[in-house]
Length: 295
Image (cartoon, helix red, strand yellow):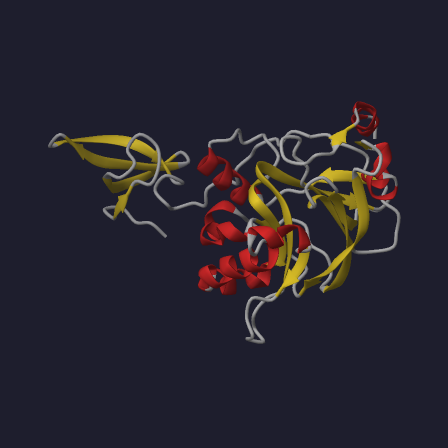
């Protein structure tokens, strides 16, 4: 409880950083005495700016964004989505181990900035070991999409996967992107999925993780095409080390994911779009994109 004559450092507004002497409550704040240019004067400062009340939750309307194609069609009939026929193959991928059910999508070679550039998706699923399917671009041997399946119920609709609003606004400010733009993260060659429980371990083993990813996914130039573009990596012999599902994707395009929801709104799948026209050889059909826009 604040008291008259108590001094506070103003935390927001035009007097931020200045010391204020509380005089008396007034309106939704306090009348205070502030000294500027050696001259004292009185003004009213909101309680929020004095740290006496919690700040209201941030508010922003994140715009809806259409799927680039119909995921059901992509993972059952890729030739209906990509040209030429046979350009993309669908096959089972590694299983994703989730210890808490909270998923982080990130570039594992950029793990030094895990806390700054990434955040767990806001929604979660039950802990477990979940299957995946990958779409592999035949021309490059790299992954252009991945699907994780959390339940056998059919998908009724898709919604873009975001992070908590506070994290969304922080990351948007860091990259100078419009706050209304749905969350995405930059791929610099690789995409990975891991349980949020692993973040502390990752931050403490950044160099080891980067080396393990490059060795497993790339190796020597002559070996690259022989390396599977989708692997589960455990970059430590320590039992506490995490398992990461790592995908060799593309270089330099934002990666975005969508939740597949059942009729009750529960997440039953997660699809990540890793396709880049400038990197993968397959070419998306316009009819597939038009069909997706009508989903």
